[in-house]
View 1: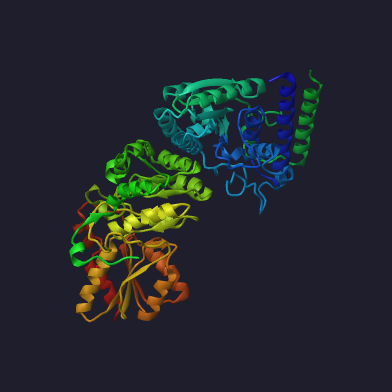
View 2: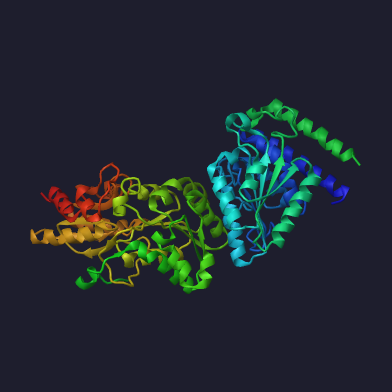
Length: 289
Length: 322
């Protein structure tokens, strides 16, 4: 992508960060930390030319699939789906409210563009493996991406799925780990260390790459290559995992690296401060060449 | 549409699980996009028979190894790509160990997954309490979007497996290990939401499901010799329950005995009680496993041990027909 496109992507990510802060503040609860750590990955997937999708036909059988395994990052998904045209941006203000499509965790029966309901950690990789197996069985063109948290990798089912996907050579499957190093109770390394995830996935037979999870150019390139490899594999290569090193709360300085912002809404003052900071970032993106 | 098994047919014992793989192959032969997942039990559940039925079916069975949670969500993923996904393993693992997967992914998303593990209830036999799943109906019946079918014999099992394919959304089909006498003639076609009056009687209603249907029919014979005419109902579809048929019978007889090879909590006993207590309270007795785990033994030994045999049903009837 050219520098203009990268600028467009950076502005998109910045705008979606503000959307995340606003919708969680409006809801009075939600998960800002993991949404902000994931939003650059989401930006690259949906607006960096990686995923094929058509908001007018969310069930198109030829589409690529995305499964948000770390369902608590729903605000990141909703902001993305709004910017991609699956839902109206005004709906973001209804997050977590009665009658809303935007449940606290994604509900596929309510929100277009959500492939499957998630929220109970550890299940998304298995579902994505099933999707990859189903697409291969049908000779369908699509591939499937899933986004996990590093804390989520403490769930044993993740490793059941990792074993299965490698054994089945589910090359249409690409997993991304949003490795922000934090979970509700603190640092992952201190709570129950998931350890070296790259080594672990490699030991399970996966093809592993790592990427700086807030470098949009690197994300577009890495995820784009993973997509190309998945398409070229005809569904028989080893699955690939992209370990994205991220910062929890990225973009809002007082949330960055703070486990306390895993699942807490900012108050009015904090919201104003966060939005002001994001506005400053927007200006510097606009002003950069 | 069904006919009851003749005396000769009743003597041919078959396990409900024996219908599993064969019926999946039958559905695939009919062009339905059926797939199965299993967890290192493809021989026991008979899903291997589906894979072996035709060379092209081999790719439609996914052996996930000893990993029931992953197995269950792989089925969810297969359903998301338009397949009708059946799960294997034993009922204790296929419902209990994978409960969160069934709840939060399959039922919450309302996916086209059919939970049909085998070896439910005490009919697992010698493997003992760790493997005798007596809470599965309770677990599955409580889930929104889930429908629950409990076949009484091989013919009903084949019908239940087919019904699950023909109706979109999550199903639980309860299958057993032990060979049991036929209740229905082969080829029976039952319906979701229906209970079946297999024997008419005016004195007491016996509502049963699974292998207890056969015990109820035996009990009714014994009761007839005592001058008590029992109406025997196969509840087959536990959810949705055929309230109309059960209520009509309860209104006629004024007394109900419920029999199931399951915990007394949360299964058919609870479903019938929920119905009657609100719409037509009558004296009831429950023939079921009383809040305890299973024990090793053969089915013929365990039925009287847990008070689930025909004699136990006769005794329960005696308590309401006083």
